[in-house]
Every structure is written in C-alpha cells, then in structure tokens.
Length: 98
Image 1 (cartoon, rainbow, N blue to C red):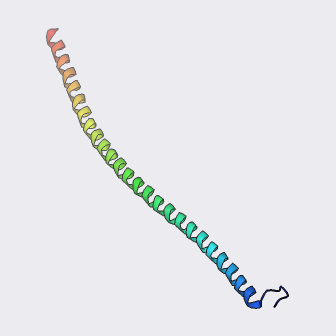
Image 2: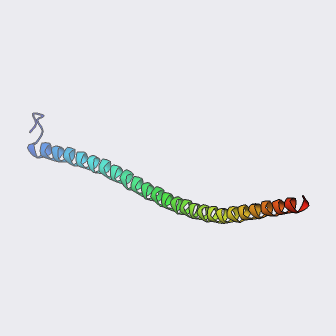
Image 3: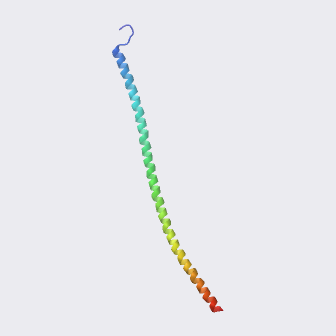
C-alpha cells in the first residue's frame, strides 16, 4: 500500500462521509423550509383571526346603523304628521280670520 493509492476501505469511508454530509445539509435545508412554512401558517392564522374580529366589529356597526335608520324613519314620520297638523291648524286660523 505504499504506492499512494488509497485503501478501498478509506475510499468507502470518504464516500460515506460525503454522502452523510450531503444528507445533513439537505435535512438542514428541509428543516429551515419547514420552519418558514410553519411561521407563514402561524402568521396566516393570526391574520385570519384579525379579519374575523374586524368583521364582527363591522357587523355590529352595521346593525347599530340599521337601528338608527329605523329610529330616524319613525321620527321623520312623526315630524311629517306634526307639519301636516300645523298646516291644517294654520288653514283653520286663516279661515276664521277672514
């Protein structure tokens, strides 16, 4: 073995060491990619939660607005009634003053 050619076992060991290093690097890359996906999923879940809360707030605001509009419609009807009553009273007064 003094000729300088590597021992077949040494070559096999080097080959295995190279394969092992390659596998470790691949696994590390996969773990990093998986971590990024988990973080993205966590962020997406957080954003969905925020959107759901905002929708509930908007729904409450819409319901409150609908209620206010109904009340304003009732008040408008009452005001129209009073305007008509005032107009009738004014007509009666004008008739009596003639």
